[in-house]
Image 1 (cartoon, rainbow, N blue to C red):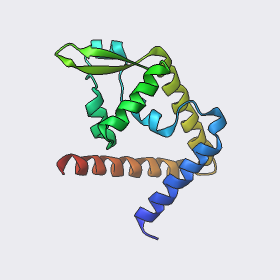
Image 2: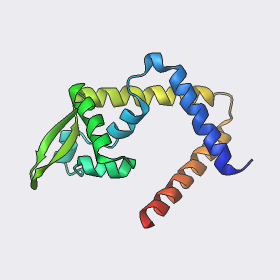
Image 3: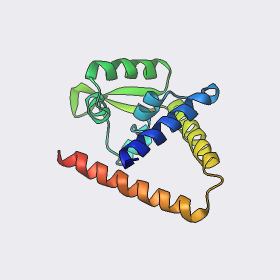
Length: 148
């Protein structure tokens, strides 16, 4: 079986595992993907880059109107806050609220627990090698995407 097929199987299995434990789910996968890209207001004040809706749509490969609906939902749930961009009054910048930060932290911990439990029978060398190789693949894919 080719690597791409193995990766597809791994992602599908992870998705099923996350869905099976959805009773404890804090965030949907698409919401989590958006929220992990947003800084907290104090991080921006300390020099972190601001995030705009159009940047998120591009990063996630979504149509701006789809991203707009997702952001409206996250705003109404109190997970994000929007402010007028100080450098461009026509645009908005997005921040995690404290509730959004708590939700991301909770969901991240849930996901770590699911993976940690799944790898419980693996020896330390195998888990370290898997982490190293996945990191390398992610870096390579990220570099490939930035040049196209």
